[in-house]
Length: 187
Ligand code: DGI
Ligand code: FE
Ligand code: FE
Ligand code: FE
Image (cartoon, rainbow, N blue to C red; front, side, top):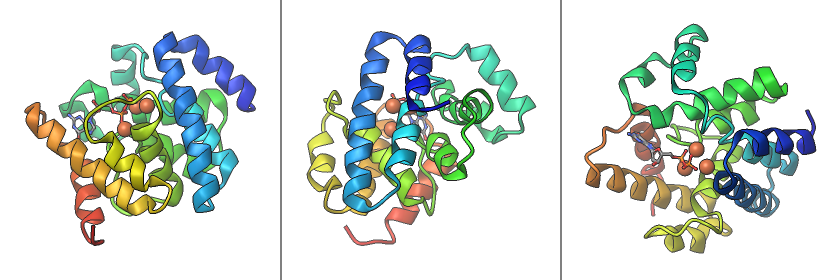
């Protein structure tokens, strides 16, 4: 599928609000990719598809997680985390995306991970700062995203973990490994 077809696909499977969020991530990811010298077409495709599985049937996601040999630790964590790897699966199988970097950017957009590629960082940060995001601390990440993607990632990951602790949610190992990795660089 080309970008138009991929957009039509996600428009069909997502409610209006989530589709608007997706369009915000697309614009932000393209700007960040241009600014930081990443592949703009890859950034656009990953952004279009990043939340493709957000409203996928929960039982079906559970089946796919088992059948398709995804990270089995996900089963013990909040189902909110499942849409990222299932989205990568749909991008590969249904949409026909071949770039492993694009598939990884979708797969790790929720938790992050250690040693993220530039494209993975861009999608993670764009998802966090796109124009319709209003939560506390978003400005702190927006401020630096166009100058220093690593600092933006580091701020976003820190704030996400603090938010999860406040909500008494468990933290997935990839999220913690992402935090430990970004803390190697100085704020
Ligand atoms: O799909 P979006 O709403 O655009 O954003 P997202 O995919 O980045 O995050 C979805 C939710 O996942 C968000 O409320 C935070 C949550 N999340 C991220 N990392 C973890 C997590 N939830 C748990 N329980 N554990 C994590 O490590
Ligand atoms: Fe998401
Ligand atoms: Fe996110
Ligand atoms: Fe999103």
